[in-house]
Length: 479
Image (cartoon, rainbow, N blue to C red; front, side, top):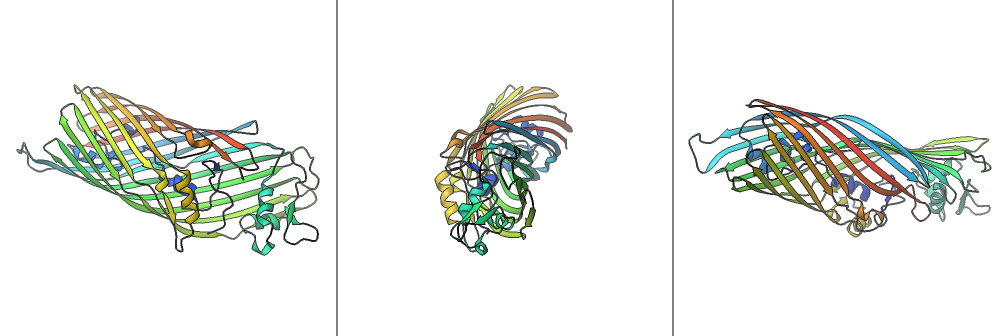
């Protein structure tokens, strides 16, 4: 594993740091309510209602509620916008992505047409649900009169010879003459920026997603007790390119014009988990649901490289690292979900849902295991969250109107991001007949987070506002 320079410090994010660390644990532990348009328009709050293919990835007992065989598909459009403020200067960027939010099939088998008591149906389903979208562009820029990224390279280099430098960062700065040894001293260094005031700019583009193929089985007992289980096969794809620049736009730094540091990361991986769920219907108007998710063990492989360019007025240098590769495993935390659903005279259904996740139980591992310090930091800096989801559907047959709201608590125990919760506002409409349906959903999500371009001890925070919109269209048949 390549040497990492910075990590989360007291809940403050370093933007971005893609050596294997607690950022990876958070990236793959936080999931969203992707899936069908109906499910999304109710903010993913259907744990006690069921009857939707998306519930296979949340409360698998929802499969047992199906009365007919069903096939559906959901194309989606995702738009992410980020506005960042750094040293009093604002910048923004956005990314648009077309994707498949869901595709699935549920088969229903009636056990006995004439049987009024006991086991009524069994259901088998296979579905894909997109659980996270990593597409984003971030732009940060501002003038810095107090420090430089090169300060971190000097600190990292001091006390070592150039042959010991990290060849993905400090070694590149050395090879492009951005850091140099002090006169008569071969193991202490300074850098080429003698007086600060340079423009700093960072652009980050990320792509990819996390999705789950759910293989589920359910059974309906007496139309009152619904049981279900899911084996979830998780697939991860994450790509990121980050470019950090420092530019002497005012021509006030002798012997220096600019440098650019580029990082590239490609992550692929897969994992598996299990889910068990139950829905109990004590009366015609009340449903109670519960589900547990085992931790997901995701085996990942990182391919990464870095490059550096410098312009020192009279001469330019460029250096490229070799390609690095590292295999490791991220284990996400256990989840527990409780739901209550209400049916109002067959004209409306409401669902309220509580989810418990303790992010301090996330961990990284490898052979040999080099993550003892990272895992200790996860346990110290992260905490449990209480996530809430509310959804309602109002029926005007054959049409339906849906609304929802979700609140996800911050996983940070300390620091500026301790209160960095995430809110989603959802809505949609649908048309359903006996044999087919079509649903539309819109999801708006907003949150804020502070981060640092490099060492928080010497740099100012970047204050970022993230907003994203998802437009989803589900089409399906029932028979």
